[in-house]
Image (cartoon, rainbow, N blue to C red; front, side, top):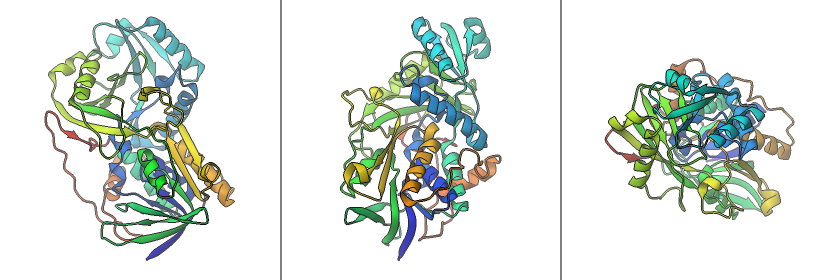
Length: 429
């Protein structure tokens, strides 16, 4: 059985579903394929922070400006896929006052709303903070629920005519005369499906190099792993960031009656097979406890690792934190003499919609489509109804049947323990 489509999108994370949504809204026949469930990818194994951009100034002003723009857009269109908790960058006694001042000045310069809080106001605002918190700056950070966001984006894509196929790994890319003309997938039922496409988009994140290799194209990905530690904690309702240069264990993100502590950054060679070290868990826990001391008395419910899709062809460092978190669009026609094929690499969950828009602009230009992007202004379906959003999550977490159908959801069970080195995200995250 074969399928013909205008655009084949490979990868069902936030960016891939965003690309499918954008292209479908512009009238292109679009098919998205994902090897697992939409809610099983690395976007759902992050700390789930909706960045204000403050983390990236002063060193990456372009990245910061992209974050603050997309932060505002998601708060408008994504409803209960996000939570507007606000965030604090906290200066502890051991942290540089000069760095704090530089952070505040850079935020204001790049359009990030700020409010500096004195030590007294900080303790009134967040009484559970460390007693040596000298001051903080309030920024418009928030929380993303990636499974809801991805599922709602996929639902929107489908409403506009896109085909969403899960549990269907891409096993090959077809090339003819220097042009990628489609792909072959192998659903769980053991069948083989051929998809012919006028253009193929590789939106597989840390796996972009592996997928590009199916077309004989090299992409120098530099994926890095990071651990998140989940603890039961009901005393925090705002994001906490340590106000120092980005380092291990400097983010605490509230999720209802729990918090996620993050994270580390260690390079990996294979995003499917990498070590999960106990020292990373210990380090994150200890570092975050300097901001939130009473987590020392709570039990670790879960640990999980995610892999960042870093792209580093010119990186001359072994420090993964020094590699740009910015996005890169790779036009393989110009770069590799392989037409009909585009990859999107790098980027962050917060900027996924903008990444998708850039890809869609590029693909539409190649296919002669002039329709404008509308994803920044059209709300996601169900965004104002958590029960609808969670229904989308269940649906798109299901095992896929053959083309043009989706099966009933399968149940998943979350186990808890002192330390569970699993990679499944927690709750709505």
